[in-house]
Length: 447
Image (cartoon, rainbow, N blue to C red; front, side, top):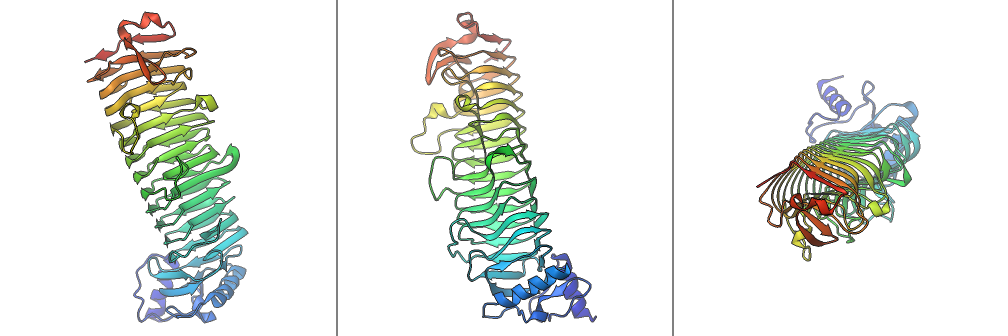
């Protein structure tokens, strides 16, 4: 093997070394995989190369070796990956351009499918309803790594009933969602960069409420839009729906039309150590029929409401909200009331401890809404420059709450006040708590 062939094989095998497009000639790569050039696949060819690429993919899968594509542009569509298929390119230099079919590439009912080092360009062409630029259905041990997907005319990646990992991948300007994962079996979504999604960033969904176990960790998600409209189903950087036991950790999220992280009917969700800025609605949500949520050590800077644990009326209960730093909460959309912009809002069976809230046009912490309040403890928090320090529902039927050991400064309407729905009906409850025996209010420092 001469030096030129050695360089090509090494680059393709690692899918990460930069090899100049010009002057590289393909050759059989017996030590690294099957060279697509053996099947007449040519980088830079103007014609559609789907047929040749498909024959190469099938042969590589049958022999359980990677198919290696040299740097360059390949026009194709409707490529199918069989079990054991591995399709490798040179990261940032091997470009597949979508020409036809329901997807650029897809796989179904297969094990051990890998794509790595590929750029998949959808060209903005509208995909059929329910399809993605890269579409995988019932795949075990899937790997999508160090790829780039851009201008998908629908979802960029759809995963139906898959396990495996999507990591180190950049997804830009998807018309719908960057990554839609439904009925996953312990998926890992890590270290990806997602920008300019038309409706949502990462969707972790289940068809019915059941365990999922996916981990969404260390991703950067920016500029998430809601082009299809709605009141929260679109516009979320991360949305977990009906999927239990999901961890969303260490993500950096900036600018979303609705939420940074929205858990909807997602039990045992953990939302930990995420950095969230410039969200146009509630930054972090745990809502509707869930049991169990941990929201801890997150930073929220700029939103209407930072954290909302809500919908006790739908069965939403049981949470711990602790160690979060939230600030700069104010209306960001036309029609939002200033008094509705809250640091932390909770309703049932929840501990709110050790959080810091700085600057909110509404309450620093809100406990309950109308009769929807039960077993809430608010302890050891620091609240500064909020309209009210702590709002507690004292409406007919509201349950118990404890407010102790908090530091509250600069609360304009009172440090701790009673609410009936949206109306303040008490002065400072620290001086009038005897009227409400269901409340314990003690040892709070007010300035």
